[in-house]
Image (cartoon, rainbow, N blue to C red; front, side, top):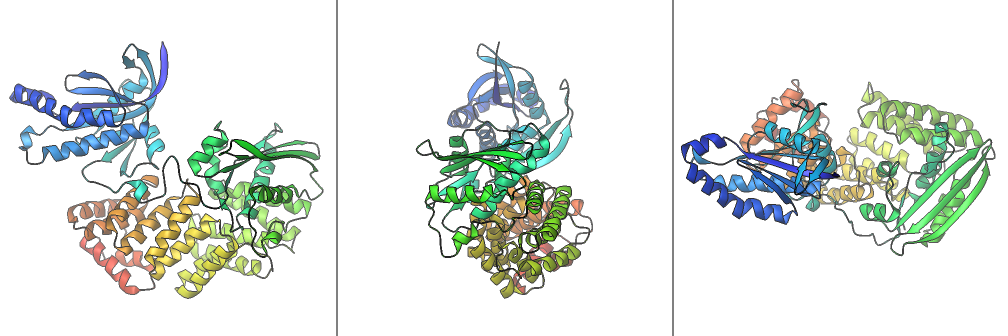
Length: 583
């Protein structure tokens, strides 16, 4: 038997038996007309294969899960339009389920759990919606502009394990996601040399040495981020390729870069062998490769050598002072190990790892007091606690972050992260000019940093410069294609203040897809609906907000929005009142 992975769409007609009992001829004629005018053309347009018709239902196979979801939504939206004006009792509505799973092929038919789950999802779907599995949601959430509602884990008959279920509401149009956010299978290449650094492999057979492979890679990244003549993909995006067998060409296409740097580290006793290779994916040739032998306790320094060689190979034009930036300020062997361990934990992106990273960075500050690296990353770990909601007291974490930032700024050589932290503190204190100046200084010191770029967009938004904010936020997203939800939510707010409500709606929905329980994205969408004249939808969303946070108040919400122009805040509060939220 042949087996393959397939995207499966299962659909059936709601109330088919009743419709047939009332008027069989009219029902069959209507179904035939819907198929010929809408359903079959949509299946063909999305490259689907109609496997079989089953009276009131159908089974369709797609080579792409994105195509399956887009086809399902197009059918539901088309049916809503075709039913407009028809008597309620004679409207034909579909339930649709979409799953991604393994199927068994028997002739033209497909069988197996993949099909069974799609059929169960279809049965679960409310009329006029599309119900998808968690696997489908994870595959498409960054690629489509639809609003997914998380229904949690559900148990289905004859399916052994519970399945995570999401429902797409299809009763309204949304701006295409590609028109809102830089996305797509093949992003255009930047004008400057562009590079992504894959996670370095640990060939030592000892997981305890993972920190070394990651630390070297992240240290190289931390130096390249300072160069204005380069385009660099953020390290957080690269985590998805850690255990992947993706080729450099495929990674480059997905991320929209030309060059891929790969590496491996193998330790034996006190020695380490580091191999690196830089590939030009346009010519499909290695433009530089090297192997280094180092003693672990001699200060190492291999990351400096690799960085210099990469810059030479890419022919990056260095600005005044940038050559000096290509040398690490951490030279003490024990401090360097602590720095690598700190980077390893920091980029894991969890609360506990952030705390462990801070302990490592504090040791760097003690072991090498003449380097700004320790204070800089300690302050940034406190900032991460406050910004990501990990702190018991956001105010206390920001005070610690600001204190360490001041220590970092006393050094002649600093990398700009402390300026991001100070910009946050200034904005919270409503010192808008100072916050903007700190952000611009951060960008000058780390022009390839998506956090610095995105936070400049954040400050510009609250200063009332919506168009500039949108440009900066989209630039940040381009540097980190696996982007954090807060960037998308911020983009939605900036679109709203610019007056582009359709794009704000699409971005807010996407923010909710990425973070289903995010109140901020819901509040932006709620205000958008009021501004678009969709009061009923705004009121429904207000009900959802109160269900998630029964203590929500407009006044409390407004306290945390540091708009320079208070009239902007007043207009926002007015829209939320009109949606039915409490003062």
